[in-house]
Image (tube, rainbow, N blue to C red):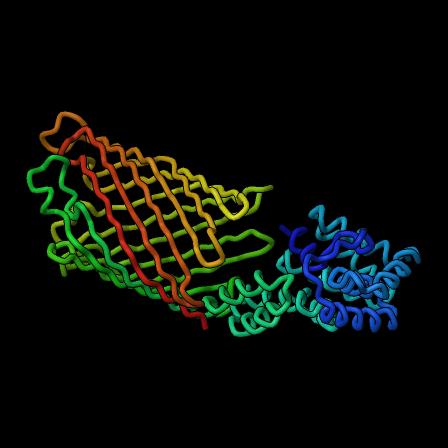
Length: 468
């Protein structure tokens, strides 16, 4: 990915490689590039002049002046600065960012070199060294041929620090460049959904085929189907941006059309800290959850969580652990206890898609052994970008749950198997509005027929996200 972005920014690996003419000529744009090239050549910026002459020649097959200038500059041989610039390109493409930074720094030492400044800044950005990156990107921005690319990366720096306004302004400006317009405009839309303070809301409605989770074949199973609607909101505050402390609050209420006893609501608050750098992240948080069921208190819980992820070649590896201290209220109090969960995950980018695999282990320990259980099983998900605004996802899970002891009067301990699936489609109507449709399904198998059931839940919803 590092090499791909860098080559997109420069347009070529070898600036003196044969020119490939674009399908549609643009003499006006070529003249603008040639003017920049002449100015850069006059002040001794050989590498930038080569790139600008090359851009002019690509846009206008009849531009012989740019072709002659390009040929003269390339035939003139290389100096030490040019050698170091080419070495930096090679190292950057090979993933040796530290070596590339040293090479680009040497190339700049021999004279003005906006191209080297740009790529040295990109390398620092990839290493999460934003303070070092910004001055270099500003230096590259002074060269018209690199202005939009430099603003693209300055916008990425602002996006990472959650400065949404600055990010959106820079990215919108960069989007005027046809070479990076699609990337910049998509990132600008993302910036308007990001920031130090992010507020999001979701309203959805659907149908649940088995609200009460009645067993298969029960005479009243049809009476357990019901329409539903829900409204939820979240606020996320990150005073230092992506790297540092954060506060999160979530509220949700869910209504059943007829089975009001199953209406539920909840509120959650969390405080945490995230450390990010060079593709690696580590976070820890404390959260408190409160839930109601049928208008009465249902659950009060405290949770501690730690999670981290890092790149490993083409994969991203992650692990999460949390412990939740649950206090169920009223008649549900026997279910109170402590839940431990650990999950290991890996994901792989496959073009416009991302494939993820995980394995999860959960332990719920209560005061009663017949209510305590151990559950484990694999999960898989696939996310596909269908277009710039449309996304589709699939997730499936297989879980095996075994209870510690038989319930009163039972001959054997209960053992369940759960098959879960989710399909999700999202489409961005505008910068902050998204329509979504989902289908959830579960098939619960059990050695106790009273706990074997099936359930499907289709929903449609509208989401709004505001970044400040």
